[in-house]
Length: 635
Ligand SMILES: [Zn+2]
Image 1 (spheres, rainbow, N blue to C red):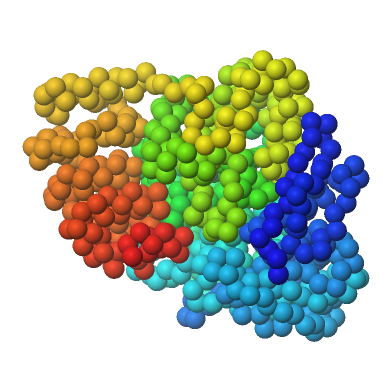
Image 2: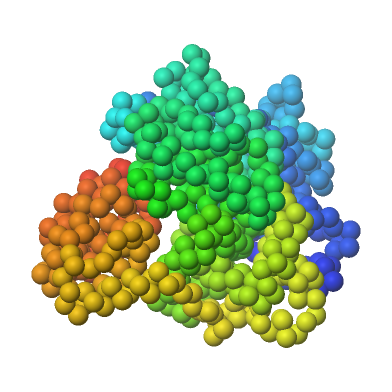
């Protein structure tokens, strides 16, 4: 099958759609521009998604009935995925994405008539196309399947790896293209489905999904779910564990293990306030409930915006609510990402850039401009770091990416987040906040429950905001921000007065004032983080001891502060922190922390030895999303 051809959708100013250099996967029938609805356009784009074998412009799934059982002994999920489909071109086959799935039988229709299917050639990260033979009038396709024990989306934790140490735990991570490792699915972000699910789990555990959720265990171990808003496949999510629920506000609450729930309820007590602040900026929350699920520490990300139920790392439980901008971020995805979705992973910046921008706006609404300014500066530092790391001329530093032939998880970096945010802040500065908010509101409403891509967004920007104003177009500088590598010359470096005070304190220390005499009263973890980032790369053992004795960095319970400090202790061979480093790396699976720390260790032969020894212990605690990267680094 010809997969590696991409259909470039060129959208003219007038909004008509031209198909340029279009070589879709196979005989996809394309409609003419004028007659295409937004939905058809989305399906055309999804058909051209280089990370999916599906051909939704021919036959597309609309609704999924999932009926599965979770078996912790064999570490497998098995059951049926039954799809309601639209056979748009009356074709005789429909294609799904699968990776490592055992496909047992496929049936058509409500009477479950068995049909034939083929599995195509296997690609390491794309998996295989599952081509099912259907009839022109087929409405239902039921796939009976079983996952493999090493399904990349699934992380099976033994009791020892949980907070309670008594029961096993399972969670999924479907983004970017891992949904296909636990469900046979048309796995492109340009395709949306509604779903119902029945999930059977061991009686002592609770199952939750990215859907309407139970709030307590029942005696049967069978749970049912409904997601009535259409979502892309990467938002399919399931978790099973010894979970309890704690209410926060009328439509918000937290799921966590009993051992963690109290700390989580304290840490995230302001999530309801965040929801109110978000709605004030971009309109009504469209997903009914907003709950959090606090996972065991091996979760590879800070958070995952699974609709109605954000999955979140326990590494933000800092006991002082100082790292909750992560919740603002995941909540913001309820608009940017979940409601208006990037059509392909090349347009990832539309999900993440908007979300970082919105996250900072929510934080500003609740904690004020100065607070948001600190987050902007830290984000800008991360962006500079990424640019230095991968090179300012690297193609992957453009907002519009080209991930063809690569696993999207490997090509998605900070650029989408922080350069995306900086671009949007640049537009806001050019037109003023009021106008920009109106524009974004209209954008979210126009594309609600649809997919969008870079061209569609830029077209909307030109029609709704630039409106032929050349001076404004120059200020917004689409070419420089979206299609060019590095950062354009007009980038405005964010500043923070609170950080200026931190810098003064740092200078005083650098000039010889002992750490314990520094004025660090009422510093937030952002100020501490900034201080640690200001520390020089080379420090004497006395300097490190001075700082550590005064501020207790090595024993910090704040994961951001500790991870930043550990980088210095590795680089300066401050062995007093070795134990803390090992504990942190063995227990925490969050990729954001792991990668820089392992990288720092790899700089020296003795560091590499240490890294390998730690990794041997830590690897079972990491999700595949993390091990794929670290295996590669350490090989
Ligand atoms: Zn995000």
